[in-house]
Amino acid sequence: SCVEGGTRVVHVAGRLDAAGARALVQEVGDDPEGTCLDLEDLRSVDAAGLAALRRLRSEGVRMRSVPEHLAWRIEAGEA
Image (cartoon, rainbow, N blue to C red; front, side, top):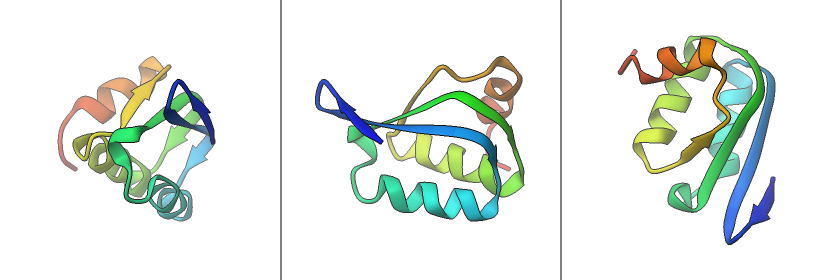
């Protein structure tokens, strides 16, 4: 992660599975509104990863560079 303009940016790449989802939630910690996930290099997610992204978004985490093939799944609502 890095800080850009006061917002912590967390880069997520590759596949987001259950283990990665737990690590991501831990990385965001107690500052979801001060965190932005950069998903440009995220290639795939499993059910646990998708649930984590949805939950983080609902808690105030912003997301940028969301790949089109994942955007609709994140926006689809609760799993």
